Every structure is written in C-alpha cells, then in structure tokens.
Amino acid sequence: MRLLPALLAAAALASFSPPALAAPPQERTVVVLLFDGVAPSLLQLAPVPAFERMRAQGSFSHGFEPPFPTISLISGFTISTGCWPEHHGIVTNKFLGEDGVVYDHSRDADWMTGCENLHQAAERQGVRTAALDWYGARSGSRGPLASIVDGTSGHDSFPDDDTRAEEVAALLALPPEQRPRLILAYFRGPDGAAHFEGMRSKAARAAVVRMDRAVARVMKAMEAGPGRDAATLVVTTDHGMAPVTEIVNIQRILRVNEIPARPLSTGTTSFLYFDDPAAVERAARKLAAYPQLEVLRREALPEYARLGQGPRVPPLIVSAKPPYFIEDASSWPVTLRWLGLWGPQFPSARFFVKATHGYPPATPGMAGVLYLWGDGVAAGIYKSHVRAVDLHPTVTALLGIEPGVPVDGELVRPFLVPEGF
Image (tube, rainbow, N blue to C red; front, side, top):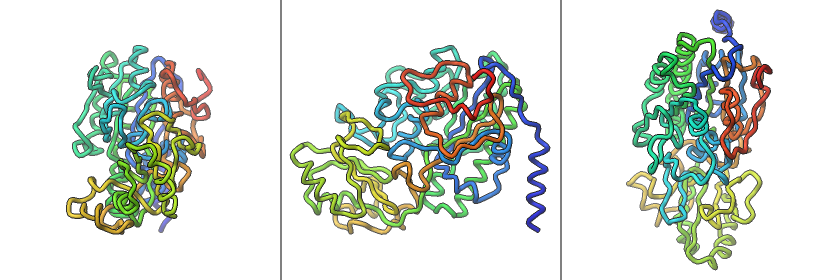
C-alpha cells in the first residue's frame, strides 16, 4: 500500500517539464522566499511536493549555516547583505546600541553599520526590486530602499504564508516594464508553531503544508508569468530549530550571584552589559561555575562567533547549552514574570516554549535549508554545507550584477549552470 503514494508522487514530478536554462543573467528575474525557522527535519512531517520538485530539478542544501547567535534578525541581515555580523552590525536580536538605545528586533536599515542589502546593491545597479517585510527594506531616515516595499508594523501583523505567496504571484504577473527583477519576501513559515506547539506537533505539520503550498503557488506564477523562461526561485530560511526543556532564568542568576550586569537575552544567549568594567572578571568566574552555560568573552570569541569587538558586543555573552534557552523575563507571560526575581534559576520550559534556536551554528538542528530552482540553476546538485553569507553573491550572479560592498560570502558555483558564471 505504501508503493502507490510514491508512484503517484513520481508521476506528478515527471509531468512537469524542467525550467529553461538559457536566459542571459541581465534578463533574469530572481525570487527569494525566506521562511522563518525551517529545520530540515520539519520537511519530513508532511508531503512537500513543491520542495520535492525543486530538489529533483534544481540544487539544494540541508546544511545552510546561519550566523551566531542562530536567531532571526541577525540571520536575516546576514543573508541579505552577504556579510557577517561584525561588518553589518546586527549582532543579535536585542543589543545595546552605541548611544544606549536598545535594538529590539528591528528591520530598520539605519541600525546597520556597514554592507549593502540585496535590494540596495540591486537598486544601485538599476535592478528594480520588491522587498516584502524584508530586512533593511526601510530606513527611518531615508525611507524605502527598494522600488516596492510592503512593510508591516511587527511580527504579529505579517500576512500568513498563503497571502504572502499571492502578493509575490501578483508581482510576477506584472508586465515586463513594471515587474521587479528581484523579489525578496519574508514568510512566517513554521517558526511559531514549532516554538509553541513543538517540532512534531499538528500545528508544525500544518505550517509545513502551508509553506509548501506557498512555494507551489509561486512556482506556478513563475511558469505562467511574462518572464516564465527567465525566472529563478530561491527558497531559504534564517535558522533551524531544536527541542528545549528548561529556561535559564538569567535575571535570577545575576541577582543570586550579585552580578551588576544588564542582560539583553533572546534565543539561547544573553548579552551582559556592565557599567563597571571591574565587575566583569568576577562575573565571568561566577557564571563559569554553571555547567548549563558557556561564557564567551568579547576579546576571545570562538571562531564561529563572527561578531567583532565593537561596542555593541558586550564584555560577556552567556550562551546556554542544549536543551536550555534564555529569554528576558520581560518577554515571559505576564503571570510568570515574578519568577525572574524570586523563582528557580532553571524553571521548566513547558510554560514558555517547546523548541527554539540560537545555539552555535554547528549544534544539531541549527542549520537550515536552501533550495534553488529555475533558470540558471544546475539540476540534481546537493551540497552538505552552504554559509548564510554565500546567498547574496549567488543571487547577484544570477541577476548579472556585482555583489554589495563589502561582501564576505562567495558564489555557490556548483548550484549554477556553467554558462555565464
């Protein structure tokens, strides 16, 4: 009985003709869809025919390496700029800026300290771009930084994946003189469902089905649109996901150990800022006594932590070890925030989340997915490892333009057909 679904899936894939691979890069349209929180294991929860088609006819990796910490905003800006955080300046989801203002999950390009986002590099070189809830699409001081910008006020107001796919499809249906050659779109993906319901939950499965349906809708629009013979699809994510069982009550730990630090915590890390530099050494010793934690010093960061040593990076970073995670008490449910002052140092995670991300990139579950399909993409290629910074120069190569300045990534050459690259 198991053979019939497999045969039907194979027949469905065979009924599609592979996309053309002949257009000059200067005539190509590239669509980049970023779904939040796609660990490769999530694709096993449900049938994913669109991903299977991309896998069969294009190139892919299930080892897409995000930056550290492996959380959303730092990863999104790294993907968009092709730069590591030490160069683009977004060092985590919450940090203290040079002027003492807290950065808190902002997409405002004015927070960047260097590098160019994909839409900035493209627009500078005359490529019309659409950026839908994309990283750095808007600047508080300069306004929209792409020809078409659809910005919402926050994560709770982002459209669902079906609606976002229809927005992308509408852009692809525009006549050539109006259609953007680069479309960048953020999708909710399975992140929320995996966080709050668990990685093997019905909610996570339903989110994966919606994600695949959104990819299929965009593929259909690409094949039906005016640029059907010169379009490339890139599907990726900002990070993976792993189960957690306990939370690090960093506020309580600092209080118990009389450590005078200001914590800014998201995912599995807490950035500790000190008014008194003399307090850092004692704090490091106290925190190092916890086997659940790794204490990172700004002047001696491990190789995977490409954060630099600028003022946004604090003297100490507390990195939780699996299966622990860290979140500031101000982000906890209102009824539980008192635990930050008086509760246990390691409460159960069941009242908070069931899975999360933020660990060092090599930690199982933190890698994400990267799929390429369409014009200019080699068929049947798999790479076990691709870095987040490598997507930017690969997309600009597909567009026939130069990458942003500066850029840390390199072209993923095996994913592209040899002609013109």
